[in-house]
Length: 315
Image (cartoon, rainbow, N blue to C red; front, side, top):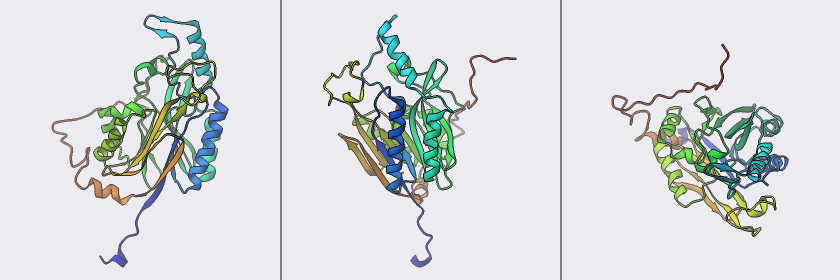
């Protein structure tokens, strides 16, 4: 094939947003998310990822009055405020965000805290030109997050086909679950969206490892959160100075061969963009397809239960 007859490159521009919204102010969080999606789209992004718990908030440094075997009245009231700041799905907040992606004809993955009755879930919302497309509930909240959030089940492991690439999501430390990764690789994820609040340097190795293991683009979106985004009456363990950094970002975009295309971003809010050559997916999978030609189903198999798990069923 001569250069003149070569197939045109398949490209897509993506963005990861590094920001946080004021805690317990859901209207402000939704408005800020809308603004950030618009800004990323104005930069040409077709897929936009916002951090974990952007809508509803990530209460970094708060203990909710919990010690083993006891809860305080003040901690219970703090949870009441957190519960009130979460969003119902479907609901007006999600519809407002869906209206923006419909208008702009973009896809977005946005971290949120879902309220279903008395239980909260950490979720990734999938939105697109057709509006709200579904959600992924975090399967395993990490450490003290289990005080606040319930566990998702296998019924919310979607992969969204944009017509150009397939989007999937794992939230924060779910990215350390090898069986979850394997299940998602088997769904053919091209763009691995990783909303998170993990700002450690070690997290960068995880993002690059998943890109190499899954031979997919990785879009890691982290919060940048300062003390002054929390109400004045709260006292995080990191201190009360307004400019104290609670979450210091580290958002990054990685290629299917582990090359860092943008970031990591530190020390402030911002938007990273990258133009992806989607043909790099096939180039990278030439010598490694973890659930295809590099698998050994005669030795290892994985069963995934994707049924919804209701606690009460009427018969």
